[in-house]
Length: 537
Length: 99
Image (cartoon, rainbow over all chains, first blue to last red; front, side, top):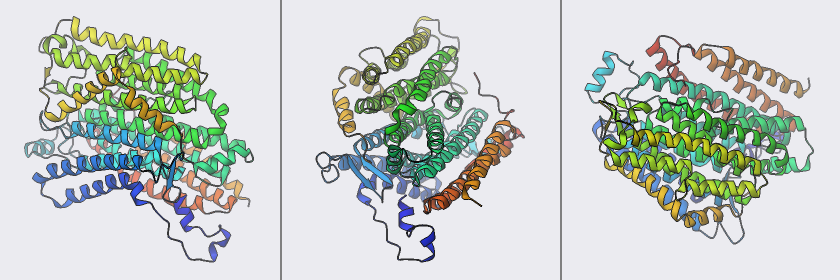
C-alpha cells in the first residue's frame, strides 16, 4: 500500500501524465526496533565478508545481542511514549499505512525479542564439540572435504546474520498493516529459517531433508497465501487490512472472491502456526533442524505467526466472524485432538515436543476464535509463557548427549533421573508446564485461554481442549516415569555440563515456568493492557 | 477481451501449479510448479489492477517477482545440497524423517 500510494497518480489511466511523486513520510523512530535488527543483520553480512575468520564469532555475538537488546529497549520506550499512545488511542499507523505500531504489536514484538535473545544463547553455545552447526554446509556428508573442513575447524558464522534476518521478519510479520508488507515479512522470516534448518552438524542427511521439506511446503503454502491476497485485492481494490474490512462491512463486492481470499490467506497463516491439517511439516522439521533453531522456531515463529493470524482475522475479517468461525472451530478441534493423540505414539523426544507444540497451537486457537479483547490478551499471555518454557525444554535436549550427538530417542532417556537428577527434574518441570499442572505457567496460560473461549461462547471447544489436555498429560507423565522410575540404559547418554549460555537459557525457562505459575499477575496485567484497545486500523 | 478472462486464466494456472506440486516427484519440478503458482498470482494481481483502475496490484506483482527470485536462490541451494549428498532429487527418496 505504502509504496503504491507513493507511486500512484490517480489510477491506471492517469499514469500517462506523470505528476510530481510525493516522498513518502516514514516514522523512523517508531520503526526503529525492526530497523536496528535488519541493519545489524546487514552489518553481519559485511562482517562475514571482510573480518578475519577468528574474530568473526565474537563480533557477531556482540552485534546480535546488542541489536536484540537495543531493539527491546526501544520497543519499551515506544510503548511508554505518550505521543503514540495518547489517552484512548489504540496506536499509530506508520510508514504510509504499511506498519501498525499499536499495543498488541508492541507486546508481541517485545516477546519475540526476548525469546530470540534466549534462543540466540543456544545458537551461540559452542561448549560441547564446537557447536550444533555444520562446519561446511556445502560439503557432502561423509566426504573427505567435510573431514578436512572439520579438522581445519571451519565454522559457519553466517548463522548469526541469518538469525537476525529471520527475527527482523518475525518483528514485521505481526506489525504489517497491509497484506503486501505481510507477505514480504513472511518470506523474510521464512527464507533464512529454511537455510538454518539444513545446517545441523550431526545427522546432516536428516537436517538437509528437513530443510527441503520445510522449503517445499513453505513455498507451497506462501503461494496459497499470495493467491488469497490476490483474491482479497480483487474483492476490495486494495491490500490494506482496513480497506478490506470496510469493503466487507458494506457487503458490496463478490462473495466468491471474499471467501476464496479468507480461505487461502487462512491456509498460509495456519500453515505457519502448524494447525491441523497443515501440520505435517512440523514434526519433520523440528526433528531434523539443529536443536537451537528448533527452539527459535517453536518460540519466536509461533508467536509471530499467531500475531499475524490474529491481526488479519480481527482487523480485516473482524466483521465476518460468523463466516470464518465454524471453519476455525473445526481446525481448532482437529489441531488439539490430533496433536495430543499422535504425540502418544512418538519415540523421538524432539518429535514429541513438535506434536505437543501442535496441540498448544490448538489451545491458543480456542481463544483466538472468540474474537474479543479477552481472547487477544489470553493468547498474548499464553504465547509469552509457552515460548519461554519451550526454549528451556529444547535447551535441556541439547545437554543429553550420545557420542554421535544429541540422544533424541526416548529409550535413551530411560533412568536419566538416576544418572542426572537435576537435568531430569528440570525437563520434568517443563513437561508438567506443557501439561498445564497448577502452579506452573502452563496452567495459568491454559486457564486464561479456556476462560476467554468460554466467555466467547465456545464451551464445546473448551471441553475438547480439556480432554486433549488430559490425553497430552498422559504422554508427558509417561516421559517423566521413564526418566525417574525405569532402570538406566547401559552405556546411556552423557549429560553435558551446561555452559553459561545454555545454563542461562534453561534457568530462564525454568524460572518463568515457576514464577509465572505462582505470580502471573504482572505479565497478565501487561497482556490485558496491551489487548485492551485491540488493533489499530 | 474482458480483464475478467485473465482472472480465470490465473485461477487455471494456479490450479495446474498446485496439481503439479502434488503429483510431481522431482523436487526441482515441484519447485517450478510453485513458481507457476506465484506467476498465476501475479497475473491475477495485474488483471485486478486493471479491473479496479488502480496501480496497487501492479506494484504487488513487482514485489512478488523479487521474492520469487530470492526464493529460487534459497531453494536451489537446499536442493543442490540434497542432490550432492544423495545423487537424487526425488522427494520419495528423502524418507528418513517419519513417524
